[in-house]
Image 1 (tube, rainbow, N blue to C red):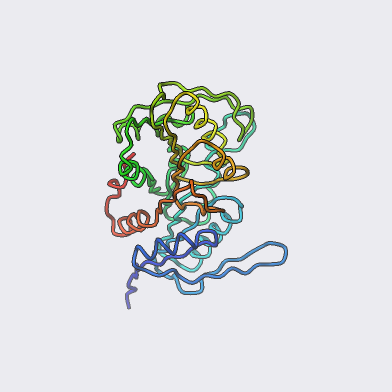
Image 2: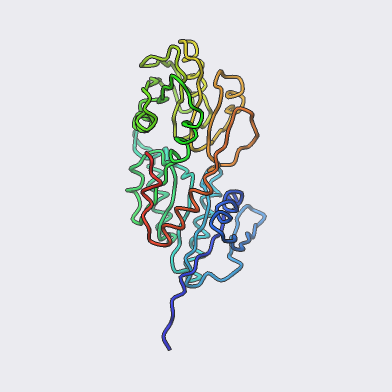
Length: 314
């Protein structure tokens, strides 16, 4: 008797990303697999698959935004799938947490992103899918294939559809110039750079703008918005320097602390984000573009051994 290899595909979601996983699998034309989580009274938890995964391609969808339980749940699910004899285990992590810790920028700190990559590898992941990493080189922290998707393939068409006159792309800091430059190339618009000094994490000190914003409609491009201090300060400063309007594009709406309040109070007219992280509150200024169709397409191509480079605008 020879064993036949059943490579059929199954999708599962971590607790924090069920809202997104449901949309991805619907676009794929499949259904979400059944899982459950047993919680102990001290906060320990044990996820389990409530259907067979033996010999299957298993896709586990979970963004690893705070709390760290989301990361731990993903690791435990990967381990459970491996021990249940899944054929391949793909972690679909639209927002990869700890990505800001991609280097030692001061003495005696962790390189958190590398540690997370090692933990995913140790748990038995076969490949990782993610979107708009804080730094491209994080892909090199993994010893398994990484499919790195760019939200620009959704954002660029949206900005084009607005048909903005006198458009200028802005980078909120020196680190984001490469990303902003790619947008300015695709949208054939000039670019300006904000220069800021940080007194400490999440707090912006002084800020200036390099380039001309007078009479222009600005679009600030970033990978994430956390406390919204930088983009709101940049927007107000640019309007002060004669800009007609300021919008912001950011893939991951971390939006912690005073972020929502700052956006409401600022002179920014629109913040465009994806649903890689769920919004805590609805806001008339925040527009969400779903990544569900994009990820369904990438999953389909990867599963069928097709190229995904068409999804890379930047």
